[in-house]
Image 1 (cartoon, rainbow, N blue to C red):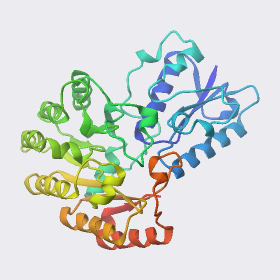
Image 2: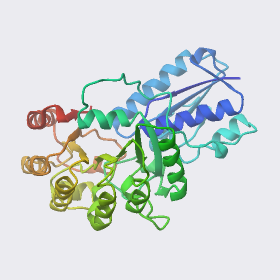
Image 3: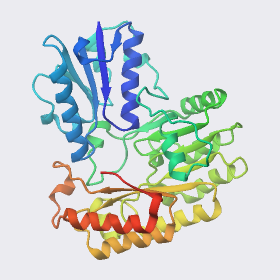
Length: 377
């Protein structure tokens, strides 16, 4: 039996797609590179915002147009849970990141999905060429996303009004600490140059199993070796809540300096907008905590995500975001123009910001930050 697998999602969904491929190969099915030659076509999707959803639907339609009449289409990832109405009639089956065992019912293989380990790399990773020049903090972080990855949790504990990912990934589910340490040690033993800790919200790690991310860091950062560690999407709220614990972890790393970069998605510097987003922190607290980390642990590069043009964002709100950028002096920043998902709670908020105003504000940020900022549309 031939199976085609494609992915149009984030790094975590790419790892899901690789796990599907590993599952198929374990069951001695043939993975092909052309939908026209396959008996089953599996697409792992994204639907984090409007533009991502449209891209997923377009890819789904493209695959459907190329497959034979006898072939069956299976849609995985976030789209089926977030926007089930966009998964058109004629799709044979769907699955989410939380119920990949659905494939057992389809393929009925001897090896079950539960027996397939979470991969640390995927065929969808970009192939970066070796460079001799020193990389910028952003380049280091971006390359690490396509290196050795260790997923430490799925889901999250928050309910941000703009976010729909939780519909697909559910509540927080942390990987047992000893399983993470084993993956980490294996990466060090195999001389992986980078290790990226990933999750739905890495900062929330452990709240459901009686531990915390800083306890994990204290354990793994002391493992000797020549490698760099990066942390993906660490909600700053958790740093603010337990700054003393994270300082202990950073102190443990102060000699070896393995920890090279952390991305803290803050989204806005305005308390009014943060409240509308249902982000549980104050801008001043985020500024204080992050400035302290940069001052006391300068080897750790700090990044953030910002949403520009969230409904109701006034000039005063935007100025507060500019103050955040000036106060913290991030090493790298990703800016997202607000892209509304029609079923997100933020879609019901008044005072939408027009695209011209959003573009102008993005231009102001680009003028301040230069090559430290990436505009993601």
